[in-house]
Length: 163
Image (cartoon, rainbow, N blue to C red):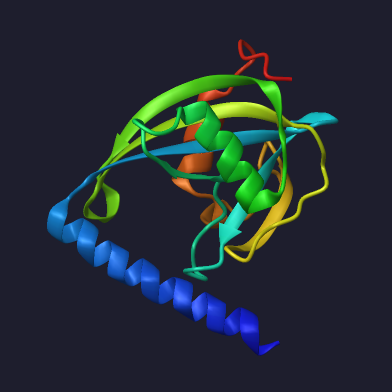
């Protein structure tokens, strides 16, 4: 029982050091976020809560990549597999690109929609909470929803045919 607490503290400390670096050097970072749809219900998507920063809202799976070493679609596959243990269907739709200067760094974020091949989630230790969530966000506390989720849902519409 003691191990998850130590892991969470270590991840939190590493995150704090990373934020100091970002504020000091303001690096360009590249990332992906995925609106991952349930394989049997296109009105349900995967929401996660990172284990570092217990007060963080639900967000989308995703993370950083290096454009010279990895394609952004490959990064999405990797991140979703690492965080939730899920494989994705071949078709991935790019929803939008956004630049964020939150936390002192310059984030170039690409949002995608994709369908999971399975509903069997296997989260890693970086994930404190994971759930299939209605696209309507019905039953979800509005203060517990990240800007990433709102942004992706805003760009995910009937013209997209990920499912």
